[in-house]
Length: 357
Picture 1: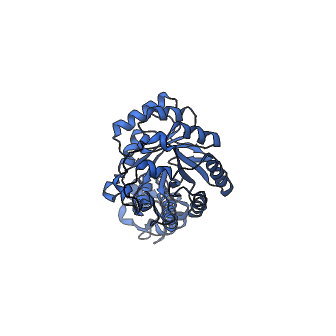
Picture 2: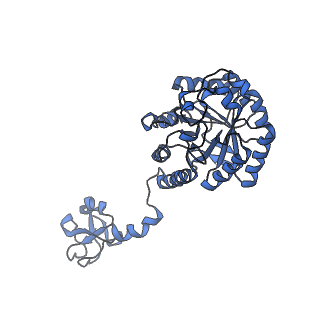
Picture 3: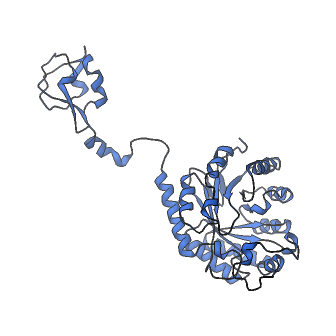
């Protein structure tokens, strides 16, 4: 197995298969470059019950050329200038160094973990300087080995999205991260389509990842449905990430593939409930069943009067409630015993009433 530990710790929260899924409210750039909106979304993330709120940190000139065209989904999200370049769009979404510090401190006051995705080296340094507890690597950079190496040098947990990638590519990325001494990693199944059609979610990949990598596996959800969150949790997802918006009609590239506050609150509620319902993999009598076990299960019962010393046979016994006598499974070997006392009809048989022939 590639990784040594199947859990990671982020800001004191253990993340792995034995813990409730770690829920990340992804603000991304849905603040539209507004510090006030960013703070409002931190408050909303706290309200919906998320463990962390995540932003995106970048220097536009370091990640995209000035004439780089927008993706098709960017062109149909309500931005008024359809000919606007990706560079121009991203420039309007940047947060300053000062704003990053302010948002980090605001998260601390609201008792929610601040996370962000760095897209360039300067952003890694900024996030490390403000004290970020873990780095999130976007699908666009999951094969950007120079950036990954630099992130790994900071010795913090890393969450890796896997959109637009084959398993072989993810295996290579994890192998490379290991050579960079990146010990704490989690991997998210992700389909980079916005919003994602449910037929393209490929949630079964979660189980493929669980079998392949010995680390927490999660799901970055770009659908507009509730069920994927429930199903991913049922499949063993330890992390759930979902874009958050204040209003799906707001201008910007990601609002259409995001959840409203009430939608995300319901999603997280269902995730928590699903995890509780999954319970333990060990099949055993539960505490809540013990009283009913005694009253509803059955015991061997005498069908007729049985004299002391009588050799026993199956015809002498029935199987009735309650279960405070010999288990019905004893029925098949009862002919190997005899009674050591008189037994009245309809008496529940106990081991003290019989002995081996």
